[in-house]
Length: 226
Ligand SMILES: C[S@@+](CC[C@H](N)C(=O)[O-])C[C@H]1O[C@@H](n2cnc3c(N)ncnc32)[C@H](O)[C@@H]1O
Image (tube, rainbow, N blue to C red; front, side, top):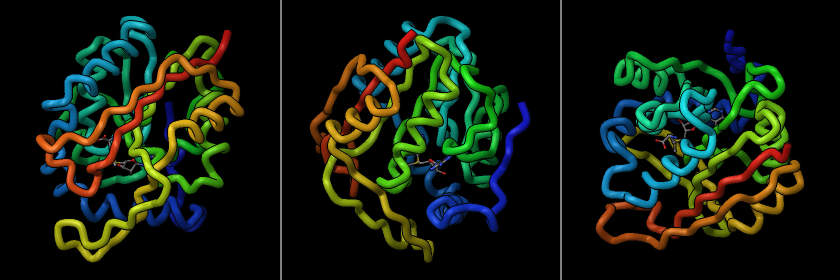
């Protein structure tokens, strides 16, 4: 597979801003979220259930993989997974920390994949930087690259309003982190053609040090029928 990296001059503003933000914070982000599934049994159970449904060795993309910790987790679960992200700096960390795995640069709104190429896709807190008006395009693209029967697992923070994160770890950057109502996401996913397999919401947990993300966390699994 050859990744079609968006050229910054061609990118919509939100992709350019997201890439620049994560290029700046990549090392600090990776150090802070070294294992984003640690101490989270529900968050570990959901990818395990997803892996069992898509099957051993299934072709799966971890879209918006960041430093690759979730990609590594999916690989341990036996999936034929690769990671994709906008940010070159995030990908450099992912390749360093997971040298046996494949990571590609690109946008999940314009995936360098043929129709029906994947048995599964995971978007673990990566749709949160896509503006509301582009979510239909995102879900249409994910539907396109999944084979009939393919499954999509999503994680995101719940809420109504975006939260703007300013100066993380002292870096002079900022970015909107969008929170969404699960019912709105389910409606848009259904409009793209997906069938809902499950929804789960975990309440905020004081023991997890969730910081600005101390809100209910939503998880959806949807299926491309067929
Ligand atoms: C909050 S981080 C989550 C990273 C990782 N999934 C995790 O849970 O640790 C969001 C990641 O999504 C990536 N991202 C956001 N929008 C993207 C897009 N349209 N295409 C590819 N990656 C994207 C960002 O570059 C960033 O690495």
